[in-house]
Amino acid sequence: VDREMFPDSIVCFETVLEVRRELYGWDDPLVGDALHMEGFVRSKMGDYDRALMLLWDALRIRKIASEPLKISATLRLLADLHFSKEENMHAALFYEECARHLKEHDMHDPHLPLVLIDLARTKDRLGEYAESMNFFEEALGLYEHSLDRDDDRIASLQYEMGVLAFQMGERDRGEECFRHFIRIRKCKGSSMDEGVANALFVLGSLHWATKKRDLAQECWHEALEIFRGLGRTDDDPYVRSLKEKIHRAQRRPITRIFRGS
Image (cartoon, rainbow, N blue to C red; front, top):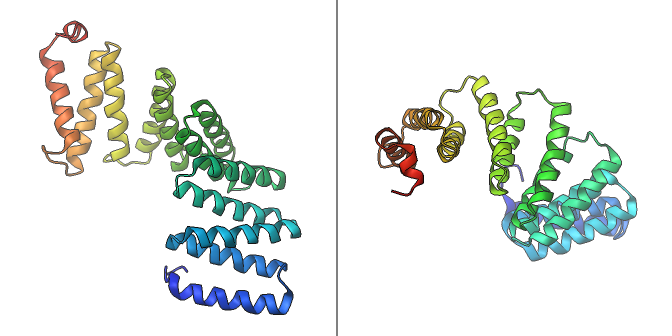
């Protein structure tokens, strides 16, 4: 499995499953483990229908044995499978149940913030933006409690929250999240960071729209410098767009832009 030799591993799991059923019966926890692993491999192969059947049976057995961590692991696989199929309502239900099991077992379980982030992304797909932001915030709170304040995982989460905030029309919040993201990435010592360039591109546009012309140009110039440092050519759409924005900003008064001239 680690080497992604999935067809070969299926034969092994099928044999293990057959032997364990003969030795221990159909509802033994060891049978549930084998079902879970074969379901995992089949989901990786894109055999979703068979994977669903296996995982449902694994979940049934694991619930009989009342093993919270194993139950949550199978619930998460089911959620991931539905997410891959863009069956978002089903995915959200499984992520929510998975999060409940993890919270009942241990609020500081390292898997919990990851499940909450996946749930937030699913809610975003469903257009339930306020709920999505709530789950992102819950995950952020767990990260801030357990990680260094400049951890990359916090930076990535701030970026996602910023994108969602802008999508919700919350400009100030979006800007604050992007500022946190940029600060963390820069403190890591990487001067050529595509994520930072993308965030600066957006912040520049935000500043321009709010008539902060100098700040807008500062962001755009820095973003352009990063993209060029990463080897982007003048034909790159981001580079071309930034050059056009900077050129217009230098030539035209901002008041004329907002009059649509």
